[in-house]
Image 1 (cartoon, helix red, strand yellow):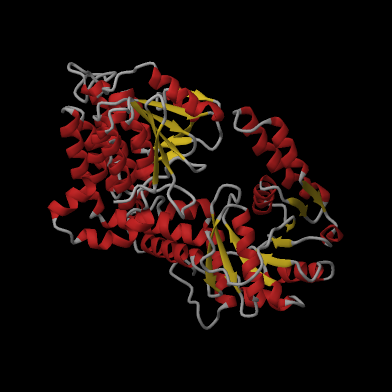
Image 2 (cartoon, helix red, strand yellow):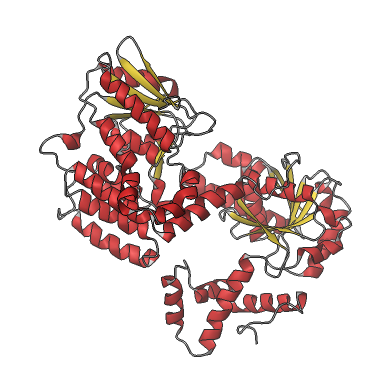
Length: 576
């Protein structure tokens, strides 16, 4: 049994310090090796009469990022076929270990020096006191619901007992996360001190001879604010069921399981509540929804953001100056997100008034953030100073990258491309923001099609995280690599798609909307169509999407694709 993942040391005052520092990983994650190391440390503390208390902290910039979902994804199919007794034992393993930790009979304090999420925060909950560093990197919370799971190491039982059921629900059901000061105000941590004072404050608390018993282990304990059957709390479960039905149509089982854990477990002693939590965790781990969400939202998303499709062996690229052609809503949104990442932006349109209007989008957005306290005035001014509106293409002679975001018309885009070719340096990448026009055909207007690529942002570009990266027939590996590095610089998620009709998103949404309109034409009630789509798990019905886009725009897009792909595209039922 190894303890190298957790360094164990006891000082002259009898304080044991457990330093979490997983070798070879940038962040501490919880896997079987981590749990083996923690169990060994618990045994050492229990058997060492010198130890009067313990501090759990991290040797990395973060505390613990939670479970190793990469490892879990590798075994998740096997878990679906695992005997139920074995599955329950596996799901309860960390929960049992943390229960052993908190009932050790020696006071423990969590010295939180970085991000403590999921199982990482559940370790903190099992301690008797929690001290967080006052630093922007410190974030605490239980985000498991966001990947289709539940906090399975005591989170659904300890947090309601600590701050009350109603106060705990947003953190458990929605995966809400807070920085240190806000976490203290919400009761998630007990103290917030300067980063360099965290260990000292933890030791001072232990030397004050605190109790080594959790409140919920004291006879006569009552949950703050009332238990699940209390008249002040019970209506929240009724309303919660209604809201879950309206929001997810119960396509996502995790929130309902979390609510059940709270309702059932908080009526019982903590040990029985923890068993109920493990039972629901085992149920969820077999859920195809959870498996799909882990693969999509964590594993594959992380791989995409780390450049899984980036050609190997090419130098990293950093955009210092970005040109944007078209200061409409799309161009204005890209300008804002680029400026927020420290990139100098030149925003060009047909006249100065149009270019200035594009910058005004950033001004208004940042002003709202300042008013709400989300941004300082100084930082907002610095972001705005990076955006230069204008009309002269000469401003782009030293640009590292240019994104053309003009109207979806091949002739207009070709004219812009020719103007750009006359001024751009040879190293500059030219990207077209298009939702459907073929990149290989658009590249024909350029003298250097190898430096031409498609980048399909989604509106509003400063909020939507996805970017389609479309490689044309002549797009070089270097251009693809630079485009992916640029998307990563904007902290967005890229998907690399082939230069085929509609790429991925437009092709999918087009079929979705087209069939819905065709069904209306056949006499099917619109409400039935919308509700069926929502029940199937779509966040918005196809007819609502059509209203937002406008039928005319959908018709124009279909006609444009029929023109560009005459042998491949057939107008659907929505195009007369």
